[in-house]
Length: 197
Image 1 (tube, rainbow, N blue to C red):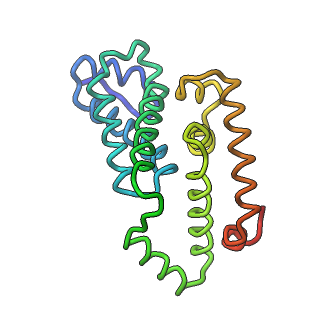
Image 2: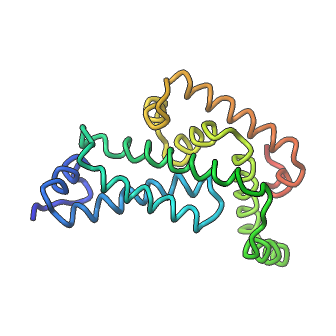
């Protein structure tokens, strides 16, 4: 087995996986899952759904790894797959009832109202942001997540969303404006984040 470490370029891991090294396969599966979890977790509020999407992304990545032309573009490729899977999950969700409330979320809300700590405020702010994000069109949601969760450039976001960089800039701009408006118009959101805009 070839010696690899955290500084090894991702393309080398892909090539090692293609040559049959099990450690490389495991490393790539973990990397794909981690990237997908961050994308799905920022958009989908349900842990089980997030986990399912991330697992589906990892399976798709590993099963179609032979089709990846540029091994160095592994992360960008994973982002594209994750974006498609998250968009599908959102479409399925929109087909269901808009405002289902899981029992565990009700329990969490009750527990939060009983304890007023800084952590509760942070968690409430995170929920407000997630609710605001959920009201945006899917492409705006995904563009914001790729920028602010993954810290991707406009070019990388364009590759993941399979659109032009000008489109990415428009999606980000409109998404930020819409989020700002939602936070300004929602007194509950303002109070949960300490009145900051």
